[in-house]
Image 1 (cartoon, rainbow, N blue to C red):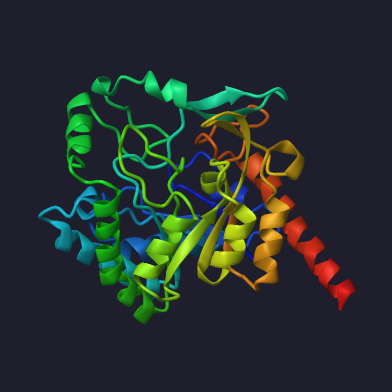
Image 2 (cartoon, helix red, strand yellow):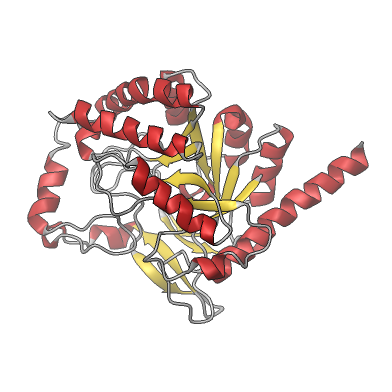
Length: 349
């Protein structure tokens, strides 16, 4: 595996001087967060990010995320213009040597949590989701721009954003995704790139909006929409694992040839559609990360992987879920799993 950490750019409280101290780090996952969805990433802007990382002895491995605009998701009047801008971003990234692109197709909201700093018994803090708490949110008041969401909305803006999906059910949204893939996968294929769709997080409808990357059936549909290695999957154990119905090990085995990127994190269930994030190791939560990774290793998967959504430890102030300390511990844990697997494979030989 290619071991990486996500970095949110020059405004990230976790500086590159600290990131570079993490042992066994192969590269960085980052994005141009100041470029709005629907606008292209220019070669100049991409090149500047590559140079900044290189100054700290680091390389850009995965672009996460090149945002897919609501115009594309809803097939609006500027849809084709935004698709071309997205393709232009691929060309700029490929020219700079970035070959993996993570994206999502979640309407209005990216990943959703109802608590960004839930206190855990050990004194650390973690992000949590509670369906009952979600139901209490007054959408008329909008959402402030904060770490959990890429964009902020006033109440009026949020009503308008949700209204765009009136009449768009899962079937129609799936058609829009298939049309998008038909346009951009050939571009990625020609550039030697892999696109890696991120599953819905959480993997069910939020605020009545359609979700179409929730489970194995959804993933089969989107991967089958364009049969190409360039049309790949981000296997996110936390997103898919938030649903008890999803068998992560079986999914890792089935989709291994199309897994282009891995997000590894652990969660603890506290009820139906109620969970919080925990340390990465097996005993901390309800997901068996070693079993998932072994399934990938057995299939010969060798792709970028990053520890995802760690706890906030020792008073660190950072983007919720993206403090350095717990993610560094998580990275070491993931490396240990691979090392143990390699030793076992060697003894079996």
